[in-house]
Each structure stands twice: as C-alpha cells, then as structure tokens.
Image 1 (cartoon, rainbow, N blue to C red):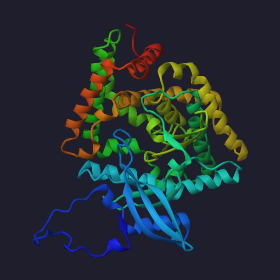
Image 2: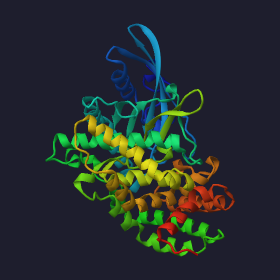
Image 3: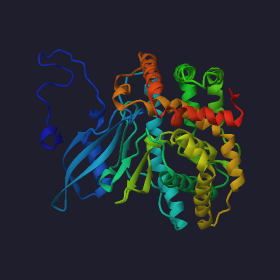
Image 4: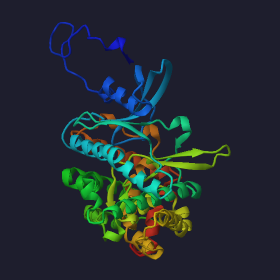
Length: 445
C-alpha cells in the first residue's frame, strides 16, 4: 500500500543494498503506478476537491486474459468535502518484458490507446451527442502516462456495474453478437460524422496515431512477426494433418502462410474514402465486456482494448469479429442477420446526424466478402488461445526478445495437443476451413 505516511524516504538509499553496495533495481508493472498518477486520475474523476489518502494495486486477471499489457487495479481511499470514500480504477501497465521489439511495440499500443481515449473519444462523442445519440460504449478514461517504458493508462472499473468477460472458449451467440455489432456500427458511423466536419482533412491527418497498427507491426519487427505467424500456421497445419477429413487442408495452410503477411498488409488498406471508417482493430471476445439482466441475458456491451484502432474498411472489423469469436454454424446461419444489425445501427446514427450514408447494404456485404480472409487469418491465429485451458497458457510475464520463439513453440505444441482432444476444435477452428472449402478457396477432399 502507498499512503501519505508510507511515502517518506526509505532507510536504504535507492540503488544500494543494506551494505551500501550497488543493487539491481527491479522494475515491475505495478511499480509504474505513482502517487502523482493516482492523484491526477482521482481529480479527473472526482473533481479538484478530492484528496488522496492511500492507494494499493490489486491484481485480478487470469492467464490468457491479456497479452499486450498487464491489467491490474488500483484501490483508492480519498476524502471529498471531509467525507471518506473509496474507488477502484483499472490500470493498463507496461509489462516490463525487456528491450528490443517489445519496447517499441508496447509504446505503440499504449500511445495509440491512450490518445484514442484522450483525444478522439471526446470528438466522437460530441458528434453523437449533437445527433441526439448515446455516447460510445467504452470505459471512462481518467489519466495516462505515455513515456517510453513507463506507460500507464487509468480507466473506469466496470465490475461494480456488473460487466463481465465472456468465456473465450464459447462461441458468442446471437444476443451477444447483436450488442457488439450495434456498437461497431455506432463507432464507425461516429467516425463518418467526424470526418464530414472537415472533409478536406482526413482523420489520420488529424489524429496521426490512427496510422495502421498491423502494417506498422510488420515493419517494426518484420522478421519476428513473420516467424510468429509462421509458427501459428505450422500449428494449424499439424492439427489439420492429424484430423481425419482435413489432411488435404495442410497443403493450403502451408501455401497461405508464405503469403499471409502480404495479405494482412493489403487487407488493412482503405479501398476508398467512402468506405473508410475508424475500426476497433482488435474486436474479439477477450476485448469485450457484457452486462446481464436477472435472467442472465446480455443487455449491454462495452468495447475494450482499443490499442489497434486504425482507419480502414468496415469489413475488416466485421470479419475479424465474426471469424474469431463464433462457432462456425452460428456464423453461417446468421451472417446476413449480423450484417443487417450492423448496417441498421450504422445508418441510424448517420440519419440522426443528417448525413448521407456512404455505402448501401449491398456494398457492405461486398466489402465484407472482400475482407473475409482477414478474419479467417486471425481466427486461425487465435485458435490455440481459444482451445487451451487457462492453466496451460504461456506466462507472458516471462517472455522477452530472447525467448519469444521458444515460448511460441511451447504454445503451439500445447495448442496441437489440446485440439486433438478438444470437442471445440470443429466448431471454433476446423469450421474456418469448411468455410474456405465452400467458397472454393480450398479444393474439397
């Protein structure tokens, strides 16, 4: 715990052990949270009259819940007008995993998400408010520190409001999908309203952090990213080879893996100005929360982890979500309904904002078809994470530039072992190849 009393100078000077010799300084994610950051978050939340009394970090997430950062919480005791109160904030922390590629990539995702909340959300919400629509369903933002290697973001704790993660092992059903697709439609539409305010300047020019994340990732760590993707596809190939009826898919996977990076970078390029919207960029089950009523039905959804936001076609977000977070049968049975739900939400916002809808329902369907391979690529990539039990997930806190491929190989082997015995392998993974066979991308056996 940190408090006014515990913030006094330590007995042993920093950087020395008890004998006075130099000591190694251990930096942990939680050590990045400082009194000053907590005080600023508190004032931004409760107003200038709030006085910090004490605070402490409390971890609560499980293995497999987070990968790009460490998510923890900060419990704060404070006074406001002489009354004692307490509040908890969710904090996203630099995972402190070493140097090299991790430093740059971590800074990229934190800067993108921090500036999204700080600079872009207020502008998008202003557009929605002027159109008479509800604000975006994202966590409230209270503070961020985006200095290299010391990145921290303070957000609203949604647990007291009843929001929960959906079990990543389960494919999302219609009721959950409807909430997310409506919110994606509202996010995309709000970005169109914002763009129309200044049509001669693109959103990426106004908000440079929206530059595509995935292409940057390929550029900044090309060899490593290619190796990681190749490892994922090698795991998929092994699963196919050992699954009766899917042996012939293995050859397609091997060929596809050789060109996957080029496909990925091409998919995120906007096809036209009319189809360009702000995408969530990483919309799958782990980055969503739901609130339920007394009967256990989902009634509200929140979009989380906006560290991959970019400007590209709507089909990218839609294919990413639908191919990463659903059982194959549910996706196929309701695909047209899902696109209808998204489009109706998108159009409703623009109609309310008295703005011309830039693409019709048929054009949306065509755009989804143009980008379905984007979603399938990530569906294949996420398959081990979806199938593996939490206790078997690789400990991300131990990964750095020196052992990442070793850890990735361990993860691949566990994914293969799990897929061979998992009842979910067909509905969450092999169904992707069934879809490709139906589309003619893979020849039937």
